[in-house]
Image 1 (tube, rainbow, N blue to C red):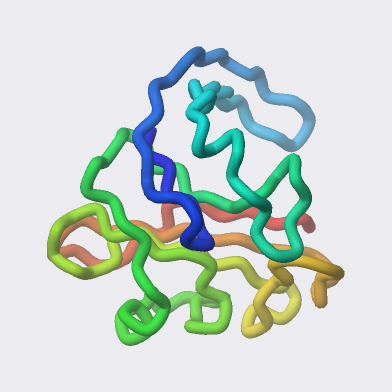
Image 2 (cartoon, helix red, strand yellow):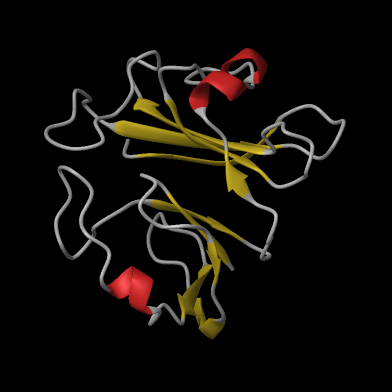
Length: 155
């Protein structure tokens, strides 16, 4: 899997999968897979915490599967003109965008916003301005329109 750390202190890394285990459905949660990575790389273990983060979770990252050595995070200003057209998708709620092709365009976009006020982003640290948080992940193939890949809410 490719790990793209947010915050700029670490560079992208491709890490080997150490184990994969099936996790059965429980209550309202669907069956899924638990994937463990070999993240014993020194850079990850000694990374200083980003501002507002605790030492045990020092930074956020986007995980790309299958691994893509070409994956890069895109700066907000390069993506804002080409966002999916859906509720909660705006320059304000864009959490991360990823370019997996060498074309300079985002191929994946993650939005985090208040479920009841989709124009309001969730807090990256500190108290949330939301009653409940929502997340939407969109992806697209080269030359294709955006499509919803995943969506979640705390409702």
